[in-house]
Image (tube, rainbow, N blue to C red; front, top):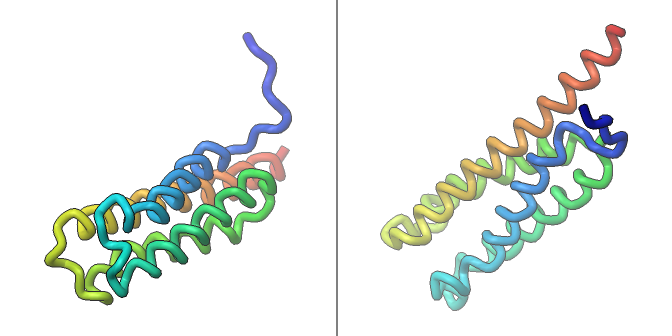
Length: 124
């Protein structure tokens, strides 16, 4: 039996997933050759915010609000193909849908795990 790590928190794994999803979203306009399109800035800004919020969240477990912000950014990423009208670009569409869904789910897991962790320790 291994001792429990005192620096681990339930949202760490979710934050790592969200961190890499934000990084991928940031570089995706170059991967898909869309860096010259008017909607590429959305991926750069939202990807950078997701990355930054996840990085801060990893180092500050009590910052549950950042997970909730990332869940909103995940929803925005999911709907952005319709907002910016690039649903005809299948690669970018699927990328936005997958990244948005992944960020949303991971952020919710991180926020809810932290809340449940606090709930269980407060009853002891």
